[in-house]
Amino acid sequence: MNFTSHDVVIIERALRTAMKHDLEEHRSRDYQEVLLKMQESAIQAFQVNAPVAIADHEGIRYDYDDSSDLM
Image (cartoon, rainbow, N blue to C red; front, side, top):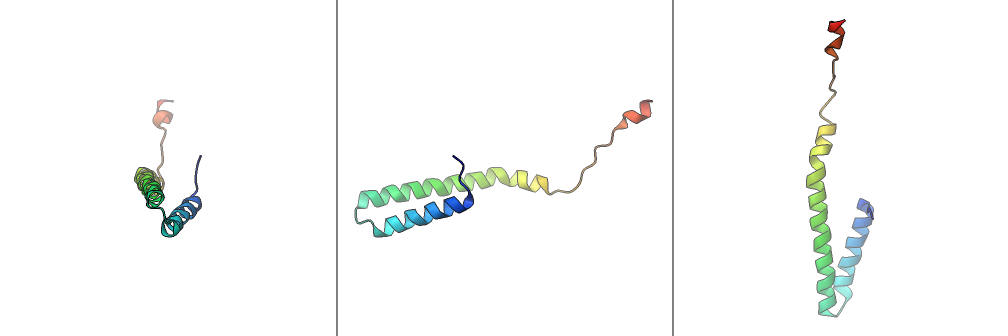
């Protein structure tokens, strides 16, 4: 399942709200664990996609075909 950045923000907000309002300690830790996993995944995704995003915007590159000299 692919989440958008908006989806991730909503899920993180829901987890933080649940952590604040849930009186049971073990469930609050579960929410915090999931939140940390999501944040780590987001950081890793950004690090993996950052070089791709930079490479896409380096400028225009031309691939000249030198085979026309052979005719």
